[in-house]
Length: 313
Length: 302
Image (cartoon, rainbow over all chains, first blue to last red; front, top):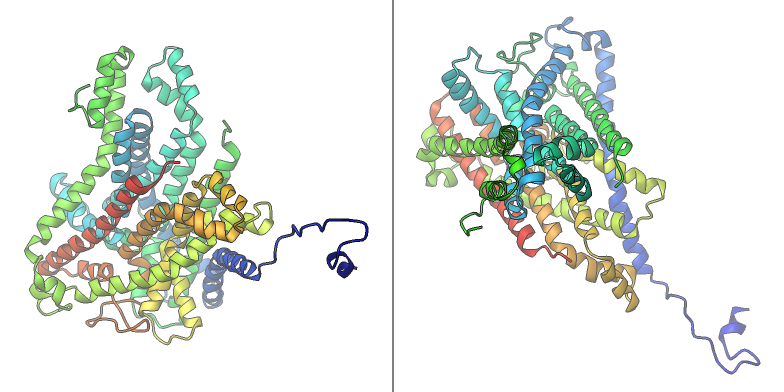
């Protein structure tokens, strides 16, 4: 049938129709498949994380009762120290201090960059603020211990804080996430259409009123997402809290004392000589799974906020 | 406006003075002052950090810093040769792993993926999540991959590089996508109209046009990788006193050396750590500066 069509002119027609279908290119298909594979690998990473953590976690809960893990005090054998609630408290307190620093300063910087700065100033100011996120966390940790704790808190302010304390860990952590909050919030503010601002000015509002009452509410979903992402950064950051926050489980609420966070626990235990397979080693994975779950939920909330409340202009 | 009025402050004050009298009441000026303070607070902290470290580390910014290995006996002569060279090894290996993979994934998502397919949607959501996973978790995954591949002991170059590559992969993918998306549709259509296949269009037109954006994102990702310590601790990287000889050789990194020294109470070690921090900061800030220059100079506005 196809032979009859392609070979020789069909009876009665003076012209042969040119073949317009694309030549098949097997190489092209291979390349596309490779690109797809690279993209699918990113899903593999997520599954890999869960797979890597869940095995030792199951083993841990066979060795240690769940009740001892979700406890405020270490009970049971002394060498495991299974209680995780003090670690969650540590994370919560340092994160809260960090957000108290990062949210106002981050939003203030974002409002200035988006609503007040000239285009040229913004081009250089924004990268400068973003440099704060580029400073390695181990440098921030060193700075927190030897400058913020010893010189600022104990020296200049004369506070009675211990060598390891949550004030310096939280404050420096806050500085570190300012750019995360500022950068995303600035994107959200800049995305508010000019017409809204012009409308506000035309009604006689000044720049501050326009920023606070028109632009800020219009960008609220993006700003909320920025704050939530800053929160998840603070929860997951390791080196600052490991170096400046100390290694003691502490249920008190006094930020002047040191306390171990979830991430600090993982880093400090991994550094020690805990033999593989022991409950002490497996607890690392149980805490990591909890940490992964917490950041996963925080992040899902952030994505949901943007999806649900985004205004389409 | 005079030439001198070039900073943001002067421009803003000039705007206020020139006509917007409504912006001159005390509340507005206080508000502007608060915004200013927010912006410069971070920059002030950065300056304090740099100045404090420079003063503390200056006495040890000598040749020993670069030519000697760590010494626990002679803190005044201890060096960071192993850490500096090790960090460069780790960064190069990380780049080899993360950049091709990241660009390939980004090209699939931007140029070839059918966004309505469920698996492409899953990849999208998944990428957003991966970008927020704590770095320490990537260290645990890399450790599991290493034991799965059958490496008997940790702390080697390829293990650290896998951890860092996993960490920066989402950053590379996201920035590459943005750069590719910014290339106007006209260029692709012109290429296709001249008879190029979709892949030829991507390889010869879209990708070259997106190179400045991709370079910026990749350099920023690598500068993050070079400063990371937490994932490296999880794959067992500690201090060593030799240089790596291959991908399966034991290695240390500058941030790891700094971290280990910081818990040493002898002041001479802290001075050495401060000097090492200066070296690390110079590396990181130089990479950031290169990225910013590429972004500001070479990025085309179509």
